[in-house]
Image (cartoon, rainbow, N blue to C red):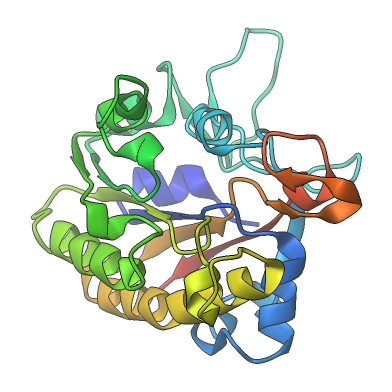
Length: 264
């Protein structure tokens, strides 16, 4: 069991990576085919957990995540939550859960001296529209450039470069570093030389991102111990039962890969 309350009390870094739109079955297929060796070396037990997202597209999923609601196991009994907003008095919260008395996790971490850093990916983090500012506004520092977005074939490299630079500049404040990896979000057909997005092209996108995510994990070691959470916010349907896209209650969308571990 991860004791997030203890980790945060000690001022260790937190890395939260969302692999945007990544289906659980695609992540598993890539892992089994040996296409994600850098991630495989870090995943607990060398595998992804299958979990179910609280939101079926980027905005509601991240709003839930930042409010304390991470993807859940598809079973009645759940593990202890990593973090939770202070509930009504009648509810008991386990000592291992980081309890924040604030409207969201980012504000709660700021109360504990953390500097909250965001490297955006998809346009919900771009500030190009008022809605695209809702999530970035939660952070002390947010970064987004067009080359961080999925149409750019080397987006994850640029995102990881920025993330490492932000971590290096954090000085003595403990960082909460959030990265929304866009490569696995449509469009990703270009990784297979196609204009069509499929499960196969998403797998190729994840294989591309793996190298840079490994570089991110390696680079953060110089800053000490980290709590790492890595998951998808939702999946995408590619013709499954006739469905396409996200924002729908389909297993291809609500089943997501999830992993959390202490990284040293």
